[in-house]
Length: 333
Image (cartoon, rainbow, N blue to C red):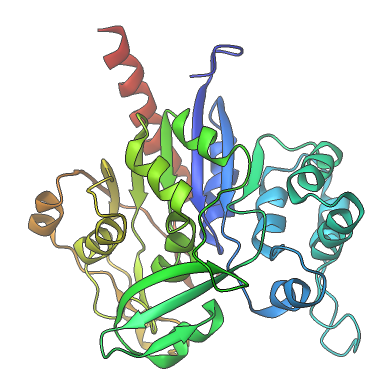
């Protein structure tokens, strides 16, 4: 808890589309929010900018800032606007990505640039890149082969044994961005996920300083398990398989609580998927979860919107609020 404002500290770690959704929901709770965002994305606009402007991939940072922003709708739409693919020079680039890259070039510091932009956007929380430099995600498959680059891993359609992150120069990624370790160590609640296990979540945790902080934090670590398996990453995974992979990578059973969806995804949804990313619903293995030594919170977390199987933000945040309130009660006893 922050002694200055008496609010609980909640740190959310991840990337992709899941992180901004949780951040939007957390704004309804009276807490201090910090988002720690992956910097291993090497695809699309983010990948192009990281290659040409020497900047951490800004896409996930942009989306998290938009989720916490107090800008009016028109300004937010401008910040999120992405140029058409027909626009040769700017094709696919989001305006917010260009602004972040420009500020980084002007100030020389990604953290300082985000702080400046955060004030302009009136953020109700902090957004921190996991590291101050772009990182490379590497995957070792069970057959001994290796894939280099976040965007390349799923294409191999092989079972992943382990992932790690290195700098662009190929040395192990050791240091987190300023304030990241403190945000984890000072947090009452650390929320991991939902998001791609190997390409959105683990790229953060495999930074040495972040992994150490997660293993040592006195805060409660909550993992929001994905609803669907993912092509080339978690095919045929149960919820326990997700947790086992996380624990194996950090060498410790660091997750305290898991949120698992028990609602059934309609068969017609699964049958009509183009088989590009999502495959089947994640199966439950409650005995496996118990063997991992964590508390299980199961609920109907499913929200079928826009033809997709997503987490229901309100229900997830309500459960996170319950965890914080229980923590407060335990502190008073």
